[in-house]
Length: 387
Ligand SMILES: Cc1cc2nc3c(=O)[nH]c(=O)nc-3n(C[C@H](O)[C@H](O)[C@H](O)COP(=O)(O)O)c2cc1C
Image (cartoon, rainbow, N blue to C red; front, side):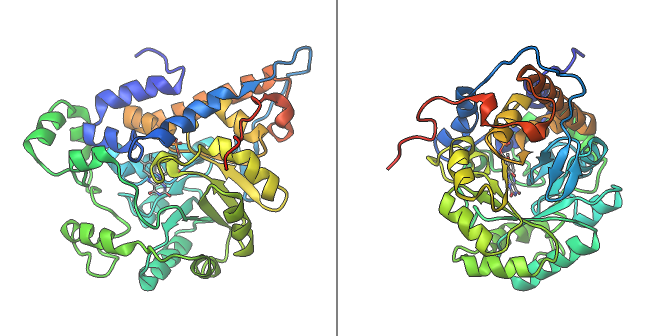
């Protein structure tokens, strides 16, 4: 196999290996996908300031995210259905993350359950919850995450209602995949993926089936999902969720300076500037374009992380230099997982760390903590003159 030198290499292998339904699930945004595309293309507008004759020896990418030591400030974002990209995918991703020294965030909508992941890993991971109506279920999820040793709780606040992704509807996305003539024909070309899947029992939503009221089998799950999300969510309710968790809480899905201020009021320890990887409000600005405004509003009062669109270490550098203290990656590690399982997630992290460290050096910096807007060339009007 040719060497993996960039995230794009992993994406190519991933596309060949995984059924179209799951590739499309990851590789799409909502409606026209404008925000999905701009999340990445807006990073390209920012340039790096080359410096020379500065001591670049002994560089470090190590830092802290919500008080936790990390080998680089890049956490694995919560991604639903990860166990369909590769058998037992959540366990593989969590293991790669713990060995690399970065946080892994398990999604509520995972295939492997919280207990499964805890049993197969050594270090604590983060757990992500959606803001659901069912208090009993939510409280039990929090208790299960606590019992499993999860440290931080990530509350995703940008999915009260769901954005539409055309491909998921057209493909009839489900877990496990529905067997139609089209999906069988496609899966027949993905033999290694299929054999691995046959070798695991984990093919349903492990945190939900058997745990949520009335969801005793995968068939009853779709009606539960349609009912479970709370369109009437407000800040009081978010504050209530916060009070149920006695560790660090990270609010994920903030894209507005006023909302960032509210996040401080409800007692969040960190926010993730995010538009859910362009999967929710199509037409929203990219995360990186919104970051400076949010940093100016709350950067000195709360820890700010960023996700959406990161595909390289240069992207991570740009987010950190703009002021974020941490980042999250979603698709960049999913490509690796689908391509090569646990090794592929490690590949993705290695690629990003190497790019970050080398680019940092060529910018004349030895420590991620010293990155600043001084390292960037930001085009005039990057934040935009929006009314
Ligand atoms: C396939 C897929 C599934 C996702 N599932 C979840 C989820 O279950 N919970 C959540 O908070 N975010 C979810 N997200 C959003 C990610 O956590 C993250 O915000 C996003 O992937 C960042 O953008 P990037 O993929 O460009 O890095 C998902 C993203 C993708 C691509």
